[in-house]
Image 1 (cartoon, rainbow, N blue to C red):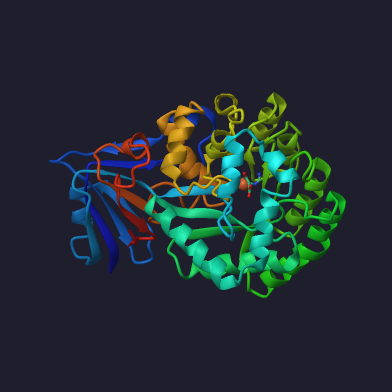
Image 2: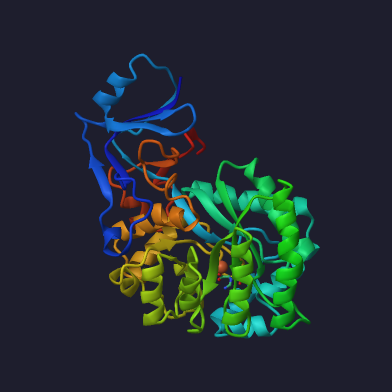
Length: 425
Ligand code: NIG
Ligand code: FE
């Protein structure tokens, strides 16, 4: 018994075909694309476990599975098929939007000015602490649904609007519950060091994260209640500076978490160098990364998770992505969905990455698929259309995949979203 046959594929973007778990540097431009045509379409078969069983000319696929029954058949009608998109960085669990701050920022207030005045993350913290778990879950599910419609099949999701044990655990529990209620796949991240809570110093907050929050999360992980994979801090001037950040990240690493944190966003603090020195799996933002930081990340293999919405909304300097790629870094993309950057669409992010950050279309797709998957430890199982990998894909309504990026803001380019071999949109 087979789960799904996708037939009459005109263009099949496999991204990689040699078992690579990521594409580094200039290799990001070399994504693999197979071309079919009306007489010789391509097809993809998915087995009962939701894994890709075969990718080939349709004739061959039909021949091999002539005695099998497919539960579902999807006709791509000569259009393009790509891997499902992977969003490498989001903050999707919170109550209380910050639309009022958007106007302030448009009028010229900087992110840190709003933050220092008690707004920003700390505003969201108050609302999220006060919210019931059910309310947070409803808000999260509606956001995940929208992401799915924009083609995201796997997403990294952070806590970080609690800043104390009870609310951080509440947020992580909400993420846990969402797993069974939405087809999108979640890699969850403990980010208790997202901001220094009101009334505390950074040193006190660091101790609270290491001595109270982290042990509570670990206990729930051991008891099988929480499935947390990564640890994050906001490593920034006036928040957690490099030394405090490193202590928190090392404590998380020692406990078995993957290190995946915010660095060098607003100020060049040397977050990239520090992250590379502790073999961080991923560092996000990097608008202010130094040349030495780029070299260090290229050497350590730490993925640079680039978030084009931040520089766009806050009118910051763009991260130097061309230098990163030229120096051989692995670059991924994320929406950074949060109350500051309210964007749920990876195709929109890919568009910004191409136009504002000067990535090529191929690089943007590699960054939004295999490399983002690698940033959350899923490069071997997700992010490309290869035999044995999880069958996450988008069936487009266009013959060329580039329409996904070219048609700015359109949701209609994606005709179907498939998660683990099930048609979910
Ligand atoms: O990635 N920079 C820190 N964290 C988020 C913003 C979170 C917020 O403003 O609520 C980011 O941009
Ligand atoms: Fe963020």
